[in-house]
Structures are given as structure tokens and as C-alpha cells.
Length: 225
Image 1 (tube, helix red, strand yellow):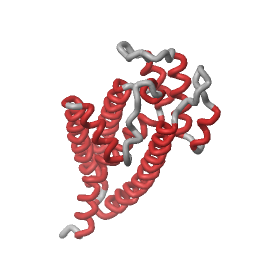
Image 2: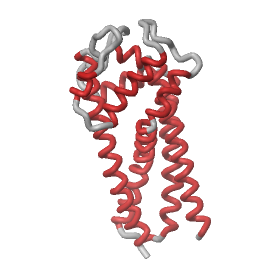
Image 3: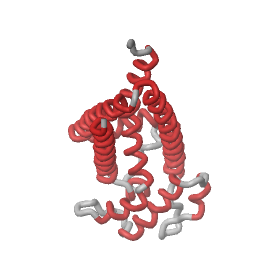
């Protein structure tokens, strides 16, 4: 029996979307778990100290304020209640504009992830009804392999030139130069380059883990048949 054209089109689309969804899931996992791993990050061997005077406790406390804003529903006036030890605002105007931009991106990523999850669930259900569960097992395994290739390429880019990848990311997702700061700004003092480099590693590890889980699910489906 000839395969309907829509089945081929949907399968091809899923082969493209599933790796992107897995990568986005890894990003979301790292993001929502940040209140747990960020305090650990500051305690890792070799993590640079703040040359302008933030203590470990201050870094943990102030980063928790930023995370609560990014993961919550507050507007930018939320930061009005937070100051540094010398009484100055926690963030200057440039930092606040960037925090707004980051929150917009985080909220968009969350919306895309939820929408993508629903879309994938519906698409996979259609394929199961039309082609049977065996097709899904093979599809999940292939998506996991493709995701590993995608992550390896990203990690290779970070290894060759982290700064180039970091700058390219900001130029793609943010307008203007609001993401550029002085070394004395709170944002750099809390989140030096080492912090962002480690985030890329955590995202890679999380995505690899999700890929392994998806591959195991696909293999188990095929094994049962």
C-alpha cells in the first residue's frame, strides 16, 4: 500500500522538529532548575571571584533575585525593592533593559516549548493511528541521533571559539547593544564568562540525556514489537 503524501510530509517535519524540541527541552530544563544549580556553580573550583567585592553569599542572594524575575510574572519594577550594600540600585538602566529583553525571550521560549509539545503530541498520535507504533519507535531513535549530531556541532563551536558563539547568540536574539556591559556592572560581576560557558555545557549535557532517554524509548517500542 502506497504511503499517503501527508504521512511522508509529517514524518519529514518531525525529523526536523524533534531534535529542535529536544534541544529546547534541554534549555528549559537548565533554566527551571537554575535556582538549584546556580548556588553550586558559584562554589565550583576555579570559578572567578568578583574583583569588585561581591561575596559568595551576595552573589547567591542577588542571582536569586534575577532568577525570580525571569521565572516569575513580575514586571521590571520588581527590581525597585533591591539595592546593593552601598545603597545603589541592584541594576543600572542598561542592565534593566537587558533583563526585560531576556525575560521576553524566556517567556517566548516557554510558549514555543508548550506549543511545540502539543503539536508533536498531536502529530505523533496521527502517525500512530495511520502507521502503527513501529514507525514512532524508529522516528524517536532517529530524532535522538540527529539531536546528538546537533549538540556535538554546537559544542564544537563553543570549544573552537566560545566568544564567537556567545556574540552570535546575542546578535540573533537581542537588538542593539544593551547586552554589552562594563566589568564593574552587577551583571558581569554576577555572571562572568565562565558562568555562560558552563551554561552551554549544562545545556549540552541535559540535551544529551534527553536524547538518550528518547532513544531508549524508541528502542523499547521496537523491541516490544
